[in-house]
Image: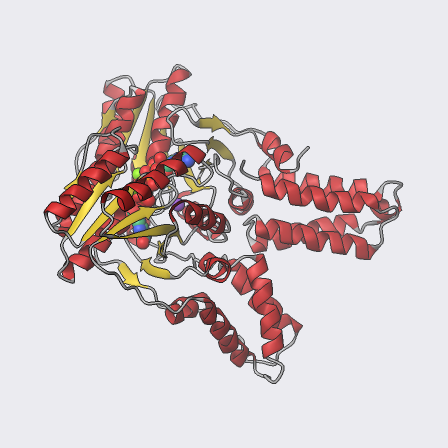
Amino acid sequence: MAFESLTQKLNDIFKKLRGKGKLSEADVKQAMKEVRLALLEADVNFKVVKDLISKITERAIGQEVMESLTPAQQVIKIVNEELTSLMGSTQSKVDFSKEITIIMLVGLQGSGKTTTAGKLGKLLSKNGKKPLLVAADIYRPAAITQLKIVGEKVGLPVFTMGQQDPVDISKASVDYAKKHNHDVVIIDTAGRLHVDDDLMNELVNISHAVDPSEILLVVDSMTGQDAVNVAEEFNNRLQLTGLILTKLDGDSRGGAALSVKAVTGCPIKYVGMGEKLDDLEIFHPERMASRILGM
Amino acid sequence: KFNKKIDEKTFEELEELLISADVGVSTTQMLIEKLKENSKKITAAEELKSVLKEEIIDLFPKENISLTYPTVMLIVGVNGVGKTTSIGKLANIYKNQGKKVILAAADTFRAAAIDQLEIWGQRVGVDVIKHQEGADPASVLFDALQAGKARKADLIICDTAGRLHTKKNLMEELKKLYRVCQKEYPQANVVSLIVLDATTGQNALIQAKMFKEAVDFSGIILTKLDGTAKGGIVIAIASELGIPVWYIGIGEGINDLHEFNSQDFVDAIFA
Ligand SMILES: Nc1nc2c(ncn2[C@@H]2O[C@H](COP(=O)(O)OP(=O)(O)OP(=O)(O)O)[C@@H](O)[C@H]2O)c(=O)[nH]1
Ligand SMILES: Nc1nc2c(ncn2[C@@H]2O[C@H](COP(=O)(O)OP(=O)(O)OP(=O)(O)O)[C@@H](O)[C@H]2O)c(=O)[nH]1
Ligand SMILES: [K+]
Ligand SMILES: [Mg+2]
Ligand SMILES: [Mg+2]
């Protein structure tokens, strides 16, 4: 299961701490060193780790903790609190306040956007919505066919205009949605690098053209240290409203999840738990935090 | 920045640089320890960097890509890393070397995977052997092997569906594909290659271990190095498993696959 090995490591560290009676400053520092390594091994970004560790250390070395009757318990509590706040504490929902909810899915190549478009469409239609999927990836070989097949599998229509300008496709899809009583439009965009200026501009233009309710960054949960660079750049350019983490059905240590949330401040809204089109779940940060922390 | 005296801070900075390139904690610690040993006489931080680079380069197996024909290449890896795209690029490389190449569309699972490979086949100008979506991958491969023999192909490259290394049944299916190659075309040289995405963190190491067990791959294709990710995890893979990187992917175009050069790779980490 994702996060499992981080959980294991943290538990071992906590166990050692509990084994001690009174804690010295050196004990706390040693434990923090170990927590730092565990987080780095779990792919949490090193800058995020640095901030986190200094925050925890500062709190833990404070007087109340060191002089309390159960110092180890206090330190563990602080680690838990800081990690939980890193994940975000409340579940955040998609904004359905507009007449038509336009959702743009964006992200690096291969992160899972097209599959997620189908999954999200399916999930929302189960909740009584009438989604339209939009094929705005004109670059990847067979991307349009892929979305058509996905749409067919989930029983949703797919708006296509061939290889035309993705901005035009997106605009036209909204008109189509209005005419055909769709209340949700999910735009599948091509994968792109955050440093690809032309393609990043394309996304900005789509976003200006359709004024989406949600711009969700689709992030592969196996991503390493670079996740924060990617997320920061997408967020700077597009003002993301949230994140979708994919491929959590594997054994990734999930550090990208923690890091991306920390640097963008964007909530994780959904998680992809498999290749099948049912495998999308609403994200519950408090559950995830307790899972990571093995609580 | 590194043109200064060496102190504990210098080593810390180097450590951070390696960690941020996804080299991983234990390989980084190993490299830094070694560096401390090897650098006792060094006084300038800049020089320290070259010693560290050498250390890393030494970890990569010194092997050149050498194929004896006919070869069957099985391309494996987790979801979305760039298998199908890399196959298109590989086909182009070998076709340009005058080899006859056939592609096998044995990813019958992912929506439009077959269409995607066909488009690559057309771009490069090589045949693609395919069945319908949902067909048995082993029977697609079987047909491709027969076609390869009949048409005297030098190279048959087999696409496979992306799969997480944690999915036992899917890994078994992959083993079966490997066995089909050996059984149905014993005269051919069977070479598996794993595709790893440079943006992947520490998970790539366990991916490599699990796929190695299943299909005993000979080399790595490291994709998406055109972004800002450094792909440092292949250093850990080289050091722990002794597996060389064969190719790197640096874009989505047909010519964006290059032979791996450890010097360039390491320079990019320190750039
Ligand atoms: N195991 C697993 N695989 C997933 C998940 N989500 C997507 N995938 C797989 O990841 C691969 C890439 O998915 P796509 O939906 O094509 O990704 P994309 O972001 O649209 O890719 P590009 O359009 O090329 O940028 C496919 O093999 C999907 O089946 C998930 O939650 N779990
Ligand atoms: N920037 C960049 N993108 C790449 C590279 N290689 C592949 N891609 C892109 O990554 C995405 C996924 O590539 P695919 O070839 O479909 O990956 P795959 O491993 O076959 O995916 P599945 O079959 O779904 O497991 C596509 O959008 C490719 O264009 C690369 O070297 N650089
Ligand atoms: K990926
Ligand atoms: Mg896509
Ligand atoms: Mg593929």
